[in-house]
Amino acid sequence: MKFGIATFPGKKIQDFANSYRKRYDPNYALIPPHITLKEPFELEEKMLPQAVEHLEQVAQETAPFNIHFHKISSFHPTNNVVYIAVENPDEMKQLHEKINRGHLYHERGYKFIPHITIGQKLPQDELLDVYGSLRMLHVDMNSWVDRFHLLYQLENGSWTIYQSFLLRG
Image (cartoon, rainbow, N blue to C red; front, top):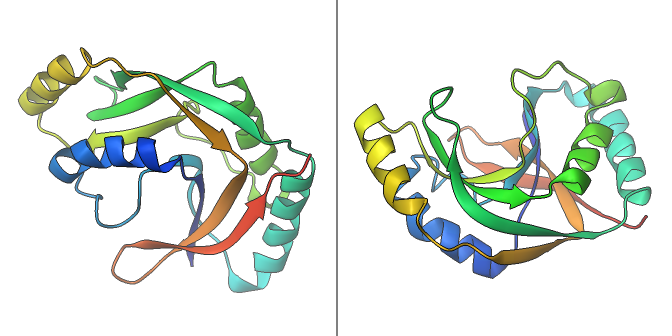
């Protein structure tokens, strides 16, 4: 079964992200705006209790924190992705590192950069055009991170919450 771990920002940020995602993100209908804390991974059902126990431990030792979104950026030329960037992402990176340990450890294909995707899989010309105009937007929004979610992928490709973990550290 395919799982992933993410946190969802507040409504104001979700609304802002969705106003662009409906046009520029083919995954718009599959999952709400989110920050991926662990890329999708395969996990056998018999390993699920150990994974949940690990995530409960991470939540117990992590205090809630605030994140600030400060600009629109892009992963171009590596990936044709436009995203809302997190300023000073240290606490988000620490949470990611804690999650990506033990039974859930895997090598990452890319450096972890916390963000909310608003456009992806765009042709080169469209990416440059979209990014060129969106990067001029003034972005200044905060979101409280007090939980993260273990998600699983349904047969239709959409993602749903398997379990939520409240930060209590």
